[in-house]
Image (cartoon, rainbow, N blue to C red; front, side):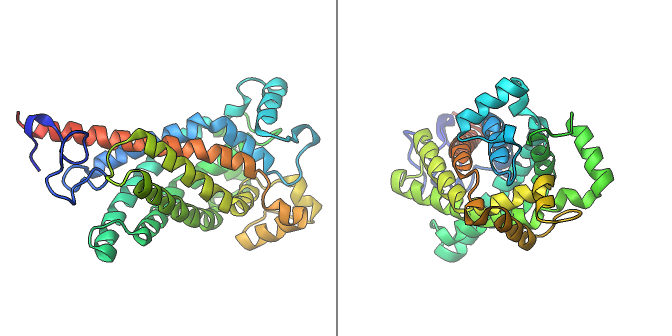
Length: 326
C-alpha cells in the first residue's frame, strides 16, 4: 500500500483508507511482526512497572495466614504501612525480574494475538471482527506469555511477601533452584494457564467489544483504548480472582498456612491448591485481595493497551511514511 506525502491511510486521522477493510486495527499491509513485538514489549514493561507497588500489596493481601504485622484493610493502608515500617523502596522489591520477563513475554503475547486474530477472523467471519477469534487468539497468546513469565512471577512473589528471606533476585533464584529444584519455577504453570486462559479470553473479548461500541471505525483514539482496556481488565480480574489466589499460594509456598493444614513438603497442583485455600479460608478465601487485584488490573490493562496501540500506530505510520514518496 503506497501513501502520498507520507500519510498512512490505514486508520490515521484525516485520511481515508484505500478500501473498507483496511482500518487501523488490522493494518493488513503495514504492521509488521517486529512492530507488534516492539509495541508489545514496551507496553508490557510499562504495564507491570507503573502499577508494581499495588501488585506487591495484592500478593500480600492474598496471603491465607498473614503475619499480624502484615494484615491490611485496604490498598492505601497497606502501601502506607509497608513504606512506614519497611522502607520507601520495599513495595518495589522484585521489580527488576518483572521488567526482564515482561518485555519478551509481552512481545510474543501481542505478536501471537495479532497473527491468530487475523487468521481466525478470516476463517470465522471473512475478515470481520469475531469475538470467538479474539477469545481463542488471546488464549493461544497466553501459552507463550506464561512460559516466559512464570519463573519471573515465582521470584517476584517470593520477594514481595512479608519478611521475605531473600535480599536480591539472584539470591532468590539460587536458593529456590538449590532447595526445590528447577521445577519450582514452573510449579504454578498449569494453574497460571488455568487462570490466564479464561482471563485473557474475557479480557480480549471485552476489549474488542468495547472498541466496537465506542470506536466502531477502529481509528487510533487514546481515550477509547484507555477506557476499553480498563473495563476489560476489571471484568477479567474480578472473574478470575479465585484462580489467582491459588496461583499465589503455589508460587509462595506460604509456610505458616501450609503447616496449619498439615501439608508437608511443597504444595503442587491446582486441585491441591483449591482444596488448601478452602480449608484455610472457605469460600471467602478465594476472593482474598480481589479489591487490590481489580485496582491493579484496571490501570495496568489501560496502560498496556494505550501504549501498545500508540506504538503500533506510530511505528506503522513511520514505516509507511519512509516507503511513500511525496
